[in-house]
Length: 293
Figure 1: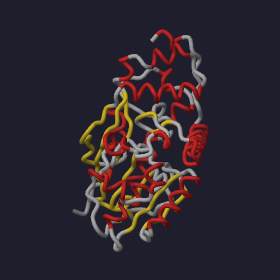
Figure 2: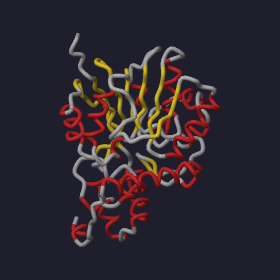
Figure 3: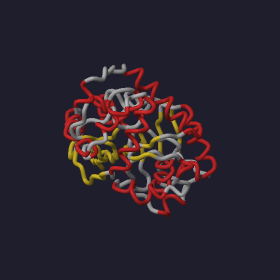
Figure 4: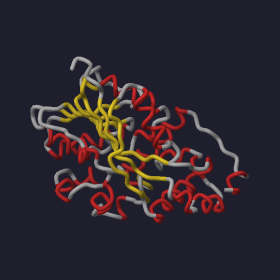
């Protein structure tokens, strides 16, 4: 990767990362979407969102069950509800709820006796999710503006936490996992879809565009799982992995390179097979131990 050695890199601060991610996702929900986690797309380029069925793992019935805007502005890399055990009466927290697709699907599972809380740090996403909830006529969902590293959720109040391609965007993932432990009830469970990596050159990770494209902040799979265990989660495991084809990853890298004004030769270095094989989404489950059991 000799091209990377001639490029000066600048490590953004945590606040710069968060603000950069907010700006990108605010633009996406306003109709200026660029890259979603897991591949290059704009809502207009794939109006039927077949990628959500073929790659991410939703069913046609899932997509038909929520307002079109919730589907159009879904930027996930998996379907965490698809491998969760959410049941009627549960309280579910969706970290990084975006336009509300997963939260609205969870509301159908928990029923009127349950509750869903959607958490997002982008005001425009919260507004869009609330609009979609009103359109869907759902009354057991609420959306809160907040940071995953400091969640506005009471201690031990949630049965299930789901998250879809969001924790990779957080500068301090350990804080997010510690917050997950805090808000989960003893015996509560986690279902996460997220981008993880193998070895990636620093040049591919550099810049705020790389973070917003779910690459810059993605960490090694082992490091991700170890961080979950270190804060007290148990039974942490990857139950499936989704790899992406070269075209999808190339599109993601080219988009971030354009935004970050990276030189073309660096893009080519980043798109070599050794890099393309080092980005995937993992479907992760875990639980909070119940010490009283």
